[in-house]
Image (cartoon, rainbow, N blue to C red):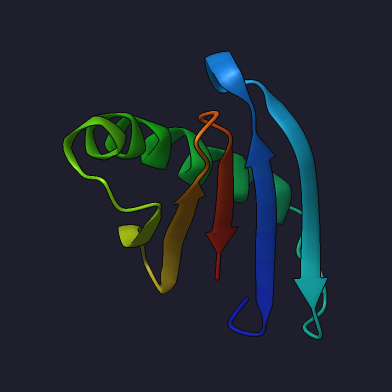
Length: 84
């Protein structure tokens, strides 16, 4: 999964709006479940960081094995997650 990335948009009340997997590596069967697991774990971290910082881009908020989670938080509290 080193050459794949997942992009997820999460709306208010932690409701996923959009999810896309991009990359050149072959898809694994458990990739979707793994990305959901990482997303839910990172949501807790982002909820705490969003209220303590004025930055909109939160680089490297969480890690799982070789995957890094980055988040862009909009003014309307829409979250753009990148898992790569």
